[in-house]
Length: 261
Image (cartoon, rainbow, N blue to C red):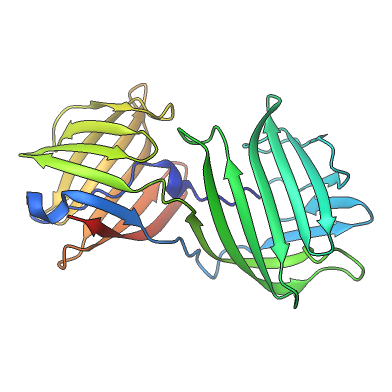
């Protein structure tokens, strides 16, 4: 659960075209994330008063009674409460250290074939954000189980308020980044590490020009690289292709587009 892709946790798109100021200076927005159709589906079961996330790593079960219950081994939260609102609606609240880190509401369509999810995330990013997701059913749950039960394929995810819209200002070989989350840095391409401000996940950043159309950003924590992003801009100067590497074997891809010069 907490199907928030790690793409949302790095600094956003830094497009480059022959390192021309007019090519990548401006404001950029990530396109909605569309997960790989071959990725593992989400498997949930709510039956006999119990909520089970069978596809989570590790899988877990908790009573669906609206109260906080311990969940072990999950990297994002320590307790979870599950409230079955009605036959097609389920609300979940996740906490860590006694503090709410996520509130999730899932609503199943009347025909049971689709699902809409809203996740409000606190403490994972510099400010609270809302993520909306859509899913399609690929398998039904057990007989007499809740409508949320079964296997689901994520179709699309996006931040509701476009909190990662990012603006770049270029002066010579120096890029100044700011975004709506309050993050910022000013770094020289192929230069030394620069301070990364506004995000406790990173303390510094370095930029490297791979080729005239591709820039690599290394986000660091106390001098150690913890996230590597590559940005490749199309020849139209309007579209960028991003690759996100968390340095632990997880690599994700996404596109973005220019929304203002």
